[in-house]
Length: 382
Image (cartoon, rainbow, N blue to C red):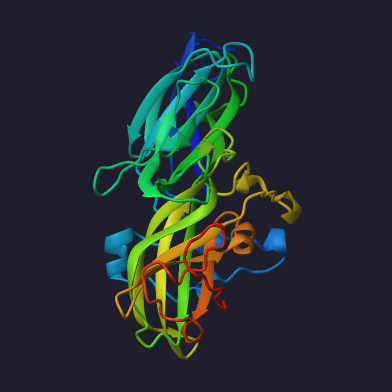
């Protein structure tokens, strides 16, 4: 969780007239405001704290055998969240009516952690989110600010890769969103009496402080397929994977995920000779971000029974066997996604001693969704 401290600074003029408030306020029809955005720690083990919900201490590091080395960072980026440095600010003036619908907006972008602007007397709503910066300059996130001034929606578009999990509504997978953080506060009053302001003697100004919680709205999942007794049977991973049943969008103002379920595409890597509690295993691992479970506000959940999810969640990986045949293997990870509703480790285990090597491409996958799959399928011990 990030703390966004907003400093509203009112200009003052010092006068020498006796029996006056010291210093006297020069009350004009607007007030200057300073935004202060401090650097906040976003460690995964802090954000993935499910103790209050499930009554257990979630030690994700003890479950994560894939690791994260320099090659992973070059391909997929850092394992956890990173503090953004550029922010978008939307200011909505509602005049003398708090919580009123928005009919006007002021847009600003800040580089760094300080923003200075001017505010009319009255009530304001403020929405802040991070600007998106990618290594290749290609952005998956799209922001809808036109449908309504009362909220901003972020969503992603479809890839060219076909998928059947979300059919018939969506027949292709979607790009994973970039890391997104947002904060929203309403009915912030700036009045001529400067109620709620405190005098800063050092700067000679009156200051009003607001604390806004800047929460992640995209949730990190670390996925790993543990290959027991592989012995070279699975020779390579295609590097493509999907996670189904996730939300297509999120509303920045309240953090609620949309209701449309999609399949999120992401990349994975086969890593050989990994240590799993003394056992030598091969692991297909990866990292993806999603908007979470449909219709959910993960940052507002306090009890396990608040997690409502009508969708099944399937994770698939495409692999190549040592005879050159490839296959897409599908796992039902619904329980793990629901339990880790704001991100975490998803683990499935596959004993290759129980998996027949396919004699033609596409023939060995455990297809958990499609009934009319033409090839012979096998249910794998997990």
